[in-house]
Amino acid sequence: MTDFASISLSGKKINVSRKEMTFSEKIFLPSIIKGMGITLKHFFRKKVTIQYPEVKREFSPVYRGQHILMRDENGAERCTACGLCAVACPAEAITMKAAERKKGEEHLYREEKYASTYEINMLRCIYCGLCEEACPKEAIFLTEKLVNPEYERGGFIYGKDKLVMKPEQQVK
Ligand code: SF4
Ligand code: SF4
Image 1 (tube, rainbow, N blue to C red):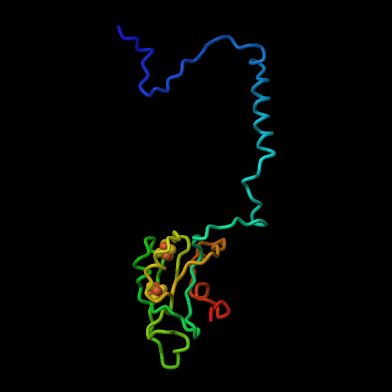
Image 2: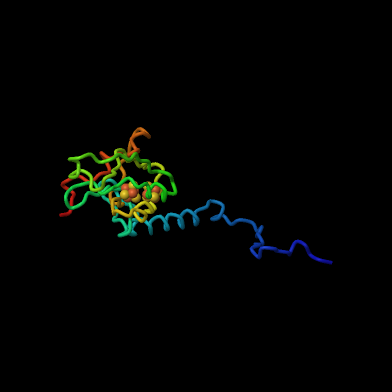
């Protein structure tokens, strides 16, 4: 007859010993000392935590943070509002409105069509970098900058005021 008590389907069965506890086991002293020893050992080890925000962790060289909308060598916005970045975005985080460049605005916008509104919802963004890959004008890049914390959700909708490269950031 099969001894069902000895069958173990997972192979992880442990036979529990029901022997009487000794006095030291009853007062848990060895276990407490063992636990304190483990705590003490970790106390002198190198800490894995950092004191943020005073100390900042170094990011990976391929880290992707906040976006930047680039200007060309003359300071004109490179984006032509083609919408390819928005189409490529898996999180549907990018929206824009296109406008036609007027006479005399050549120094502001590189192409005849430009983005009068360009917004990225930083709460939706997953920082995948596909917008950067999709852009035929090298107009959008993800930088190392962290997106700032906000109290209101609306603060995470970044418009051109936060995204377009500042003139002083321009690489000549
Ligand atoms: S990084 Fe990815 S998720 Fe974020 S806006 Fe670009 S394509 Fe969309
Ligand atoms: S950022 Fe690039 S892909 Fe996106 S609308 Fe502008 S030009 Fe097109």
